[in-house]
Length: 254
Image (cartoon, rainbow, N blue to C red; front, side, top):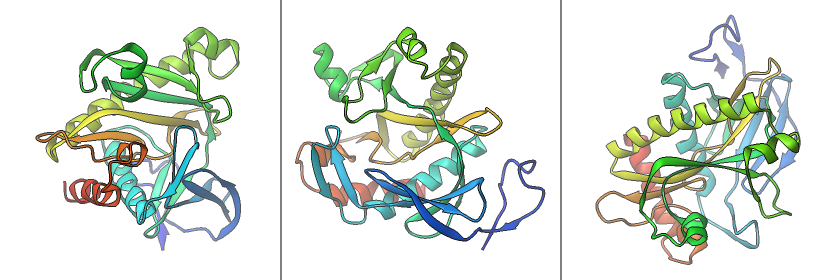
């Protein structure tokens, strides 16, 4: 196995062997992260564990880790081709990928082209209503506190991000929205909203991290409006595994 960053050759001047997988460094709700023999690279393993409502609801979605790894890898590669830097380096297997080491910025960036979920409940709007302009929300990454939303001033006062950081996060999030919306349209999916996480390289540059998958995106069939995402788990709609597999099929064939 050999890895070479496909779009940023200045990172590595030549292909290097994929480093040895070492100790587990972190386990989250959906992924495990392992150190490698290269301190600049980690291995991420995608799990089948599913949670909702800040981990108050828990379960398993068979094959979810395989789907989310494959979908994220495809979408990260597409974003890289579009000029958006990500932590993605290489898909290693059905459940694992090699990623660049970053320091995660403790903000979730929620991008809402349409009203849905907590936004619709909070403001009393119907789900599926187009939002103009697209709404961006910052949320503190904290299950214990319920991932509370933050304004710009609060994020800066708490030392989570600077004003310059927030401007860069906004620019990147809207650029990512444009790329993803266009792609999903070609595979007959409507991108309702999605969550992004970003990290900082040791150079200070902010890049996209985490994942892009049916776990982190609301995706509706363009024609029928059928929900093909984690809402099927959240709302006990059934057909969860089938929905995830259908998203994977469309994304990977698209």
